[in-house]
Image (cartoon, rainbow, N blue to C red):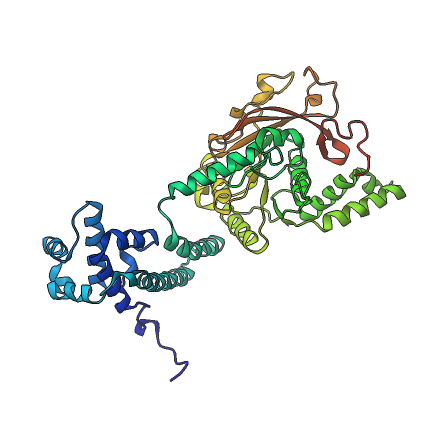
Length: 467
């Protein structure tokens, strides 16, 4: 009867016996081409449903890896040596496999059918595992949702995974990047931060990089990260001024507070004037204009407190798929959570968070800027200037290890003994680690009332200058 359903136990998992026989027959007749093609497309032993076919495929790939001659006779001997010949059906069945594929030109068609059926079985296995875990009395719901989502995404990735990269393609990609760097009109290989000197050192914020922005409290690291996110989302620094989608995970501040800060920053109006009700008509107009400009920008804010890093990756993954986000800010690392390592101590948990941030950048192929606190060691070491070092990254050396770029932010005016303490708007971004380039300090202006950073020569005296 059409539409009739059967209990799961009565259903045969998806497979195609003819396609499996055809692929194995092609592999026996033309092993050098067919086996390599199948391995490249992700075919492995479990891609075959029938146990006899799994034994034959395993024998074929073993023989190839050992550079053994492959034909019907040698395969027969191999299976006999492993005492598997009778289990697969004997010499007559091997002959039947070769007869099932009279010409190996059909190998790719058989391969695709085998791969698709294996993919369907993998999906069923993921679904069954998710169902079974739903009945676990010790279930962690957030972890189950994230791991189930990741398992389904991995199904296709595992099937299509390429185990090697063609050398000519790697050369072509490298030449393309070299030409981009040599072209005067394309100095950056990543996103522009909107700050000229930072871009000159880093050549832009590159895909798959984890960028750590670290500072002592109240130095302005959240402000700098938001300024960079705003610059990217509004297209500042891009040759075509194209707006680029960004995501901000604010684990400390609410979305409302964050947005109000961004509007005030863009309009160059102090938030204290709003709180005190001292806005002039001109300032109110600038705020409305700034709000309109930001409203058109593709910025996505998640202010969920106590967010587990695995759930954060899942949410970022969905944003990437739906909105094609190209830049992520996480504010800040020390208040994220890694439930799967929370029982192993705080340092292990921080190391787990850092590792997942790096994995998120690589998986989504976007730069991820992670804010982090610095320890008091710098101030203990030098009370006059408090100049930080990489070793001052708080809680775990794994942060420094995982990061591709580390930027240490400080403001000399906060330290009376610093030689540049008399420069009230000076902020120094020390690029202390750059895996793919130069390091060194960058001077910026910071206007605390409007929480806005600028290139050093821009608006040096007038933080209220119009955009």
